[in-house]
Length: 307
Image (tube, rainbow, N blue to C red; front, side, top):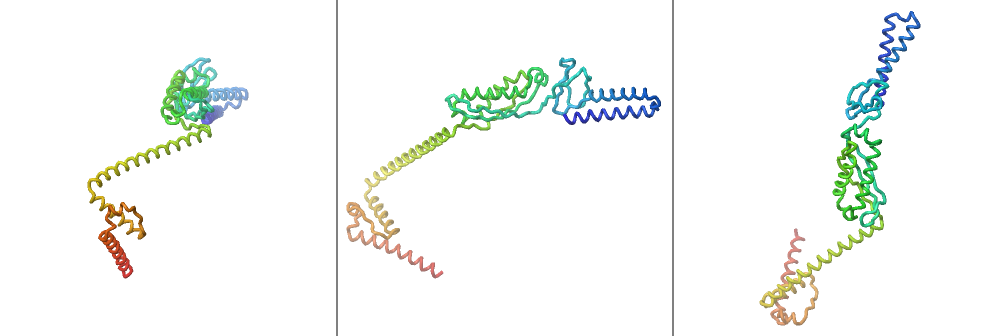
């Protein structure tokens, strides 16, 4: 609007300057009365022409009324109107416009108060209807968006609202677009920015989620123990049908325990009998195996120190 005012002022000054230059060239200043009349006429003409010339930006549409009735849409670029007869009540911006709106302390379908923030992206497709069908389309679309948001919240469960923001955005876009279509306005999209719930409910939901994760962990642990028990059962069947394999496994377990810890291992007498460790041959074999392993370790340590 500032650019339009400056341009009109410039046109006024230019036309008035040209008129005064013509009067000076015609030497009409000898007659003071004619000079005053001609100067006044030049002033009025310059004023009328400056008011008649208008410029619209590339995104603007000017709504022109003639004698109170809709006449035409002008712009973008340079255009002319008839002063006094024509008026321009609205300059309509046809670009995509963003409008923020919110619903505070609105109850969901399961009676939970929430605060929801959203952004509306919309555009005027018919400037004529936007100017004539609604008094203030900016306020109208803002109120239409808020009421639609409250309606959607009241029909939605809290869990669905927290998980399905895209679905809520699509529903809002359709509802608001239907309401604003008679005004020549098209809603491109709606984006739900944030859903705020009471702190107490947020803590309760956090505890519920933690309990659910703990339950799942216990279920997984129990299932793992069941699988281990099944494998132990299969191994027991194998050892029951093959005593030699059971004896070798028991010997290996005892050998590994003594090798790693070099401590006394207490085993049931039944296990000693099963592994035949009570006999001289069994004890000798076990002692020799442990001694050989220690000797290997000592030799490895000596070699490292020499290097």
